[in-house]
Amino acid sequence: MGKKTAKKTDYPEWKEKKVSLGNAIIIGAVLAVIGGFVGANFHHLFGGLSTYFGNSKNAELGDSGLDELYNKLATSYNGDVDKNKLLEGAKKGMAEAVGDVYTEYMDAEEADNYTNGVLHGNVGAGIGVEMGLRDGYVKVLRVLPDNPALKAGIEIGDIFYKIDGEEVYALSTSEIAKKLRGEAGTEVTVVMARDGKELEFKMKREEINNVSEYVTYDGDTAIITITRFDNNTGTEVQKEAAKFKEKGISKVILDLRGNGGGYVSAAQDLLSLWLDGQPILTQKSVHFGTEKINTSSGKAILKGMKTIVLVNGSTASASEITAAALKEYGKATIVGTKTYGKGVVQKMYNLSGGGILKVTVAEWLTPKNNSIDGEGVTPDVEVERTAEDINKMRDPQLDKAKSL
Image (cartoon, rainbow, N blue to C red):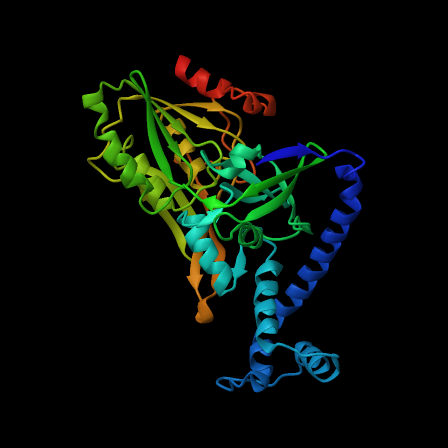
């Protein structure tokens, strides 16, 4: 399996596709307006439409424009109207109309894919990438080692454009993930956008090796790589760190590049290796008040260890919590490029029917009460890693960390 660079005669230049992208943005705006209308008429929707959906408990039949819209669809549309699909669409519209890119509703299938794949890494057969919404598009955040995407040549920052001939750039992360999965051994063709060009990759799906953390050693330096913050990520690293003394480790490099986040509790467990019962963040919420979150006490076996943290533009959320806390307490030197800047917290609500609402419930501040939302964490030592570096398997950021 490999890649080929699209020629102008085969594929139009990426800039020519901006008309199509523009249409997608317009469509998205229209959907947002519709979603706003759904959100504004929430009670009418679930009250007035309950007559049609067979649920009259606490129903209120109001003078709702949505009732009118539903009636027109049900009595005029030249085809079948799936009531469940209408409800699912209304739920998605309400979540989208909030206007927050991190708040979304997932139906039962999407929720299962998200929980097992994005949060826990149980992705089955696929191509081996971690992805997330960045700048309006779903981009590659990490290419997993020893997996099809890495072998084919897909890179961090690539935008998903087409999968098996279907345009997917306007789809959500979970929708794209679903299309990438399949039976091991089956072929998938992915077109990525990179630097204004389209690149086509043909790969065979494989069972994905997708650990959340691993530790390698370079002499007396331990390199802790964390790809995401699972429930047990922090405790697994704690177990490995307990071996550092007997291994003669004198320096730790914590690699958070491409880590889009995960559970705050996992970052809390990880930071307990350096910080002994100290606050790592303050959460502020309109509905839930203000809360300080501290590390555990008595586990800071690395508090005197020389530590370097590697970050880049895809380091986000729980990863930024980790980097900011270690920087502000003077426990580590931050190396790389400015982080993404996601300073808000999401909570997952399990809903009836198997759906999930992922909603932004609070903002978080660093130990020194700084907000990084939209700003990111600025490294102490700025070092770029270019696409050419990646292609030639060079890592100047890691090299710098080793030299400090």
